[in-house]
Length: 340
Image (tube, rainbow, N blue to C red; front, side, top):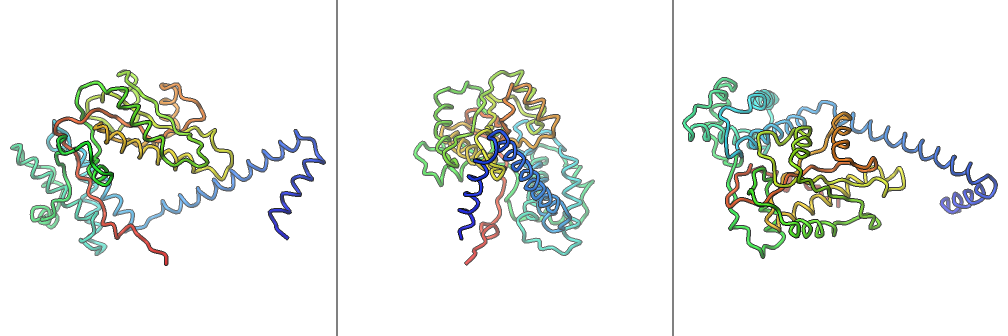
């Protein structure tokens, strides 16, 4: 006998026997129990991921601190001898990597050495000795930095004239970088609306279209939000700040618990590409807030309780030449797993 059909018949019989109010109450209890169970399942999976895994944790830690140094190097008004904490972390992780005998041919390791070389070169180019590097790193690592041949990390300039209006998608995607310093000109509403319209073609489960874009041009509000987010310090306020969210009321079942983040992420990535197509630079900032920050930003924005944050995105037209972090990517073969 078909189990699904049997369950369906049982539900129909139950609805006939008991009052509808009781049936709805029992249904809500069942959903609550299911939510508790699946969140416990998710929690155990995440707790497991937090456990020590020397190689993976080191790899991600190196990539994060390399990014922090690259972000500093991408400043037009560079502060010399910056990033002491990130440099200390890099040193600790590089020593541990070598102590574990891990391969030096991994992208995370090579990127870290390369970004340190860029740090040294930029300081010397500006007439400064990178004293922090010499204070923090041992002779073995310094030798690797000074003799590095892989120029894969640091900063670079992107030229507005290279971004032709008739790029194919591959060219557009490969030329997109996170940009944090913008032209001062006001963003055209038509350009912004056109980018959002394109993003609306992102896939949406059952065509729910639950994504939303908050457009913020009030500088006081922008400053408060960015100060709470914390990832845009040291940069001028952008012409416009976007906040992408998703309305959780679009999802009906406890099984949909991850759908709003999946759909919101796809929508936001489509929006970033669409902004790039309009020659609007952008830098997606994470919304991994604790309860206090989440509540404060919600209150500032007057957000509905049913909305969840996806990204905070400073945007502005690209300057003629923009300085950006290189953000070297892993070899594609390292992220593919064929299941034949």
